[in-house]
Image (cartoon, rainbow over all chains, first blue to last red):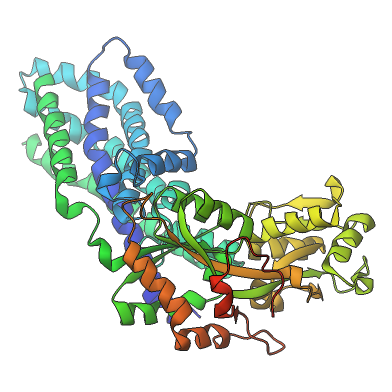
Length: 225
Length: 293
């Protein structure tokens, strides 16, 4: 059964990884610095912003998908991009969805740590760039965790991917929308198989990301001497 | 420190804006792509998998299929996000054309709706002569009836039939799922209830459920599929020429018309889809197509 579908399944898997991976990278470029920024600097409204980020995670993904549908619709404000029903549109949707997750995860992890690091670093006369690098190294587990969490959410997301992507065969069908389709067709066994592949991939990527934790250790060893 | 952040953020936003304005990222050549919004029953029958490669070979146009419910298909087309629709809900389609979103409603193929239910048939539909009788019996006998409840073509037909029979089943016996035809049939199977379904979908999953076809044949149960090109005067961005080529492919190509009737058969040997005779294509939209040869 699975073998004849392999070309199509691999197409779907590849697209899932491409779309969710891109979304995670783009979202992280915004979210991680924001997380570090929020943990470093105290300003009026910081608490509210952090609370807001946490709250926004709970928005149903279909609702986000609908909002993006109106934005990306041909007559909509961003219609000229032509990104509705394309992987590009799906990347935008997932980026928007996981940005608050990555940020709040990073902030939660960093809030305690960065104050100490900042104080220690300033005492030892570190430059701003050195301080930043130290923060990133020390807090790498939190950052990795945030990014991994973001990817997992992105690759498992259905509502917005369905709405903005359209689940078009060979063009915008990803694992989650394929699972939804097969389920609605009553092909439960195929849906579960795809689900298993999805979990394996999520596990694999998490494993890869978390193994980056050890990268910093070589630097630390050098510094000891 | 903040300076570093400011530089970084500015860089990110500038690159995003540059990225977005880059014309290469905007939609590819429109002439080679056609966005078809259609219903799940059309997609799941496998007809498009047979027809679309042929169409692409003949015209070079790649068709992107959005298989959603009838309501959503017409909404997407009405927003100008699809170039052409194939649906099976006459009133919704005629409204679509009247509102100026569609060029012309062109019925091109049909199959039929059937009523399926539990093998032992507690409502005894055998005594029914017409479809309206069937619906009256189901409402009066208090059997469980499962509905799509999602403004799909099937759901709209079901609502028309309840209203034509002037009955309504009691709410405790009427279950609305809001899911696709297959999923709804599976639920009907679990509940051993009655359900209106299109013959094609039922044939596809009949081996997996224990429900049986209990009533069919009344012309009012004809399920007519129409193709409508989205009006380029109202929605400038649509691929109007591609849409017209597809319509010509569906209605004037005799090989294709034959293929529609032969690509799949029901278990008792009848075609899954019949083509609608061409002469009906020229009749005005308001003509009652329930009367068919």
